[in-house]
Length: 108
Image (cartoon, rainbow, N blue to C red):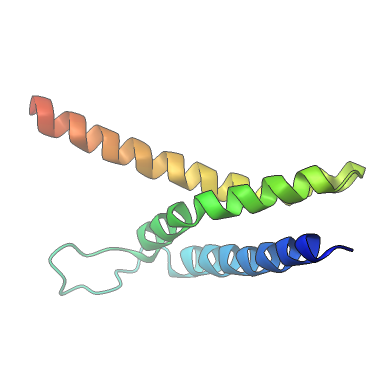
C-alpha cells in the first residue's frame, strides 16, 4: 500500500468517525434546543446538518479518490459518507437560496 493511499485511508476514517458522531448527536438530541437563551435558538438537528454541510467538500473528495483507487464490487460503500454530507450541503444551499430570493422579492 502506498503512502498516498494510506493517507487517504486515515483521512477517510477520521471523516467517517466525524460523520457518525454528528449523525448520532442529531438522532439523540433531535429537537432539543442547544441554548434556549440565544437570540436564534438552534436545535441539535439543525446544528448537525449545518456541520455536515461544512464537511461536505473534503469528505466528497476523499470518498471519490478512494472510490477510484479500489476496484472491487463493494467500493460503492465508500461513497455513503460523501453522499450524506453532499445531501446536507444541497439542503443548506437550498435554504440559503430561498432566503435570498425571499429577501430580494419580499415574499411573505
